[in-house]
Image (cartoon, rainbow, N blue to C red; front, side, top):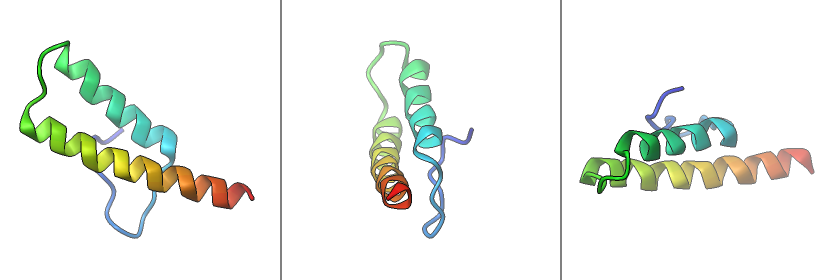
Length: 60
């Protein structure tokens, strides 16, 4: 499980991206996030939304 976002054009499964998001939260252990963690989180959330939409379209 890589915490870095996928390159454009490839879509990781939403579950994989969700695991990366959860890893950020676990690593923070209740402390405030660094700017890098916040930036990564935002990118991962966008990637997760894209993956989720792709999975819904694929299922239809």
